[in-house]
Length: 242
Length: 235
Image (cartoon, rainbow over the protein chains, first blue to last red):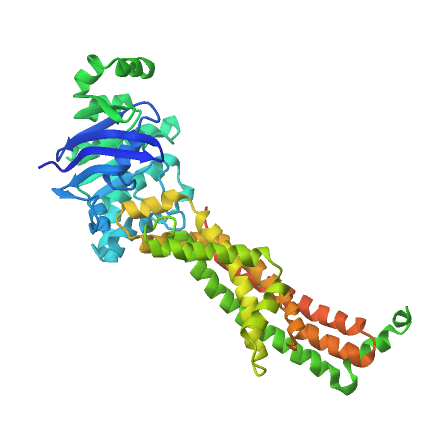
């Protein structure tokens, strides 16, 4: 059984069809990297996986259960899927510690003490052990994004979704975020990453998808994907970005 | 300009004889009571309307969308018509019994009016928070309600509060319109005094000073509250 699966997933905004039928199986432990030109639908696909966007038709199946159905408790499904956003979206009125502990405590997964301990642990892991009492506004973009990753990890998700996590960062901060993601991958986390970082896709990805005009135009191992692209649009895309 | 030459006497006449100051004080009491209850009614209506309008954005329930249509109509009508006309309609439509309590009449009329403005202030405050905050909360598995109450609203309050303060200040002033339906508020009482002394300007100036004191006091108090809230604030 795949960890998450889509069946003929379609999404339209008004008359404009963004996803034209995507069927994908993502297995436990896989690191799927999604590339594609802007406007191709790759972020929309990612956001359909945890139903931040509701698919127009097709199924999303997570851990064997169809989740885009009425009566599904989407909140409890989302507790198992962490998401990291381009704009970090930390809670500005809360300290770093509160950002990390809010969800586990409110959802009764941990007591405040347990959650605080876990926050310390996560902050150490992302290299920011002394920032627990800082507010997001006092931190750099790279630090904020690392904390956003820690916040998602605090819920111990089975799957992590990354929506262009380094696109809003100054170039010198991209590395620190990618390092955390690389370590997360080495720890065996299942990851779906929409990005423009070709180096990351090549080194960390176990599979690379090229989404173009709402469909998966090509998918392959990173080696084949970058060294022997078949689709002419992919060749064109790679010639521009590499 | 007869009154200008004997200005001190005119004000004395408007204040002291026949214990006229008691008339202002009873009018002041009425204005304060009406304002207080009108603010409470306005906040209650405003929150209900704002919640309806905000939740209609993500809800699929036909009931919510029906209520949203009603809320839009309410806001449009109230904001698009003069308060004095609204008061005359509500008063003659609802409060036809001769024994109706003037505080209730005034508070209901002004509260219904204020509710529309309060609703728009709250709605705008909530919608000023970036959508990413809601998405971040929901992506962690928090419910819409929890995300709204523990993440969105605390941020929105800071945008809402100053505008809400301004609304209350203008509400105090606008309660004076209520005097046209024979409610003995501050403006009405000043008018009574004027009709006794045959000199209307001093009593109205006195009434104006009372209004000024109330609005200044309120804006000082709101300033203090804002300062207090800003204390723990970081970007």
